Image (cartoon, rainbow, N blue to C red; front, top):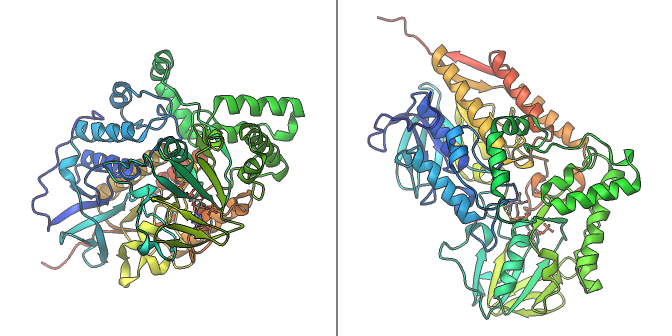
Length: 552
Ligand code: N01
């Protein structure tokens, strides 16, 4: 089948009718899922709360927003035509360019006519007798569908700390993940930004250039490696495009979903001189590949310390004021146990006269005031506050929707102590329900595009099997999901991840169960497991055939 030919779906008619599948979310996962289901001849409808496609890249429009994965890798690989036709302009694509790409693909595949925009799914309930999901939206739409597929993204529920006094603030405030579409002009303003994660590290250098003064309220310093972003060399792009098939295959079978795989060499197996040269090289190349310098950086404290110390030394070199530099140096967790940041002149920004770093670990924020913010040590007058405070990641959006499986069991109740899934794809008690890049899959620890495509293809192959074999119900079992979740924990436990207070384990949201959510076993190995499950007739799932009435 032509991989990009727009597939004609049967008219889905009114929006209160029965269809084959509902997909929630029109980011890269939901878009591709819709395309695949149409290719199977299924009638699918996507509900999307925004007024356009793009998901993460629709919402995150903060200054400096850019992907940390290189553009030639952060793109769909399922269509030769798409990957050959689209031209990326920079090594790391900026948010507006990624959003243009998403729209271009959506138009090319004629996806938008099956996407209901500005509509949020509020509730979904499984009717066991009919083997159908009843879906309700905030606009009153109701749909009945045999399959419910959550393409809701891993970072789609903004986390806004409950600071006292926010309502009294006379200025304007923003969350990076819900940025105004018209943009914000900070010229002449005193701006405060709370947080120093990836979103803050990208936006701080840009806001500092505009604002009169920028106060950065930092609780935990972060490790960051330069992006060395720039225009793409046409010769390099030509070479990538000529070898795309092979390069994509390398990424699919790699540990983290990138073309350049993790080195198999241990950090201790080379001399100190050689090790420093490798870190120097990776630092000069830039990007997330720094953590691939050696194979044991995320599993061996001694090895990790060598990589961490290299970055600490760079921070001390870049930042002129030694007191500020020391505040910016992460010391109490291993590098890579919180998401590594990628920056463009982040540390250099602290050499500007109009930027002040405020340590809110030693002197916490006490309250937002009408005119700014007060810590336990000082008061800051601010015109605007930027909350770069992250997301209720991986489970937040799924738990915010009232999803009820068999016997009325609620997903948010079932996951009260943390998510349990089989393969990050399925949940016991929730038949014909799939999560794309859900907890228990590599998802956020990988190149998201690679993991999204793998899940979408696995789910569509599964649905094709169900249709062909006339199966009405597919559901995993409590034993299988417990075993898989135990495996996810065991693999994560063999690594250093427990030592970082990361959003990967829910540590950023007060009251959220601290459970390491993504699967750390590697993208290539995970794919093999999923493929084996399918090849062996969907082991770990119970499949029930369509009930055929014998009565005349
Ligand atoms: O969020 P974060 P983010 N008082 O959770 C601080 C992806 N991403 O939006 O570390 C004071 O990382 C918090 O402090 P601490 C990427 O996967 C990708 O930046 O908890 N501070 C932290 O510094 C990334 O990892 C890209 O002590 C508070 C910050 O807020 C993920 O999104 C770009 C606080 C939150 O950092 C999330 O990144 C951007 C409080 N009460 C993001 N509460 C690209 O690829 C929180 N903080 C382009």
